[in-house]
Every structure is written in C-alpha cells, then in structure tokens.
Length: 357
Image (cartoon, rainbow, N blue to C red):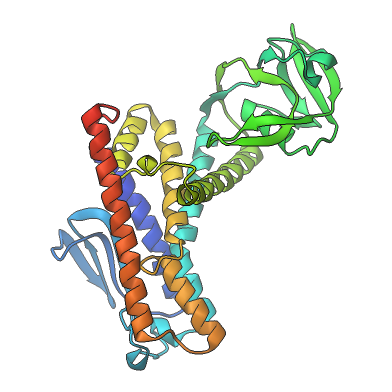
C-alpha cells in the first residue's frame, strides 16, 4: 500500500508541475499539443479535448507538456505564429518555463498550510540544559523553563526560538518564560559564538547558551499563524535545497548523499505509514525539491531553457543550433549521470541494509 501511495504522490507532484506550464501557456495564448503524466510511447489512457491530447503513460518518472513550436531548436525553422512558444515575447516565454517550478512552490506552501492546520509534532521550547558560562544562565534561566514569548512574539517551537536568536544580530531580546506555572521576564543580549550548521560546518552565530530538553508536542496554529508557518517552511526548504546543491558542488557533502527514485519511494512510503501529517510534510519538501531542481541552469531542464531565452533577449538573436544541440546533450549527460549515481547509491544502501524498501 505504501508503494502505491508513493507513486500517487510522485504523480501528483509531477501533475501539478506540468499544470503550471499548461495554465501559463493557455493564459498567453500558446497552443498546448499534449499533456502527459508519465513517459513512454504507449498510452495507458488518452483523451483529446480541443487541440490538446491528455494522456497517462506507463513510466511514472516524470511527465511533460508539449507546446506548439517547443521542438523547433533550429532558429531558422522556428514557428513564430502567435499561438507558438516562439511567437510570444521573451518575458512571457520565461514565465511559461518557470511556471512549473512556481506551481511546485505554491503546492508546497499549500501542503505546509494543511500541516499547520492539522497540527504536527515538533520540538517544544523547553530548556534542557543551560551553559553556566553563557548569558542565559546569568539572566536566571534554568532547566525545564519554557520559553513562551520573545520580543512580543509567541513561541510554540524550539526552532522558532532558535531562529529569533540567530536573526537577532546581537540585539537585546525580551524573553518571557514559564516556571511552575508563573511567568517571568528577562532581557538577554545574545553573544556570537561557535556553532555548527545543518551540514556540519563550523559557523559563528548568535547564542544565549541553552539547549532543548527534547520534549515533543503536537503543535497547531490559527489561520494567520498557519500562513506564516507555511511561508517560512517553503522559504526555508528552498534555501536548504539550494545550499545542499552548493555544498555538493564544492565537496562539503559527499556524493553518496545523492538518492535516486528508490530512496524517494522508500521515504515517501515510510512517511505515509507514519500518518497523513508526515506524508503531507514530506510531499511538500519533495515538491520544493522538484521546483528548485528544475530551475537549475542545465539545458535539459526548464532552467536551461530560461537561460537560452534570456540570452536571446539580451543579444537580440537566438543561440546557434550547434550551441543549443551540444549544450542540451551535455545537460542530458549530467542528468543521466546524476540518475545513475542516485541508483548506485540506492543499490548500495539496499545491500548494506541502510535503506529498507
């Protein structure tokens, strides 16, 4: 059952991505020739409505929207009719190309919104340990104190507290905490100290000298708080993916961290078995991943086509046929290499038992 859910989740994320391209093309008057979920010549289901053939194909590793003029790589043979991809302005073409990724980010926001409404398990802002050499201890905070407000902002999770302290830039924080059901107020000036980021790198950041107790609670939000939570999680997830790609390129993260389709299906399966909230949260992360990766400036991806279109807009002429052809081949080589590496890592993890399918 978990594997079926995984396939459905992946298919839905791909559908939403392609829906972005589809709707943007329709808005700007570009004819959509095909809308498919999955790849392959065989069609499990198809229906033609107007000029568009809608279909489901057997290889559920992607999908596509085919627009009029989209396959015309040779600038001399392009279709510049008003309902073609190349018959509209460069800005409109870029919007169509970026719309799939933007829809994935929108979907992630909506999924995180659902998570906030339903309620999710998170680390409570309860102090587990206080460093006696840091400012929090001197201000009187002790173990088991619960931080409930900072500078007038209600605190529900440890990560909210951590971010406020990190973003304080050493400015004074008015902290309200609970002890034995009584509220206390202290003023603390965070100090810059040594820490580590999520990638294990040594960094300098604002600290007050406390660590979490590790208490997990179910956290829920009202409407406005849910919007703020969904926005923050979408932005945070996007930044983490960009930072992760950057650190893979410079070698901070090992290539063994790259996962393939088996990893995605396995984690989605585990998330679905952990409940609807976990599944929604992971689907949101996966949607952000799909959106950001498609914007990478690799010729075979939407980001690569955006680069070509931007170049054409700046120099007032399209790139040469040879440049487009060879750069696209290089893009596919990069993508296929990453897919093979992901599959290799998946197989390695399956064999050593660290990935259970």
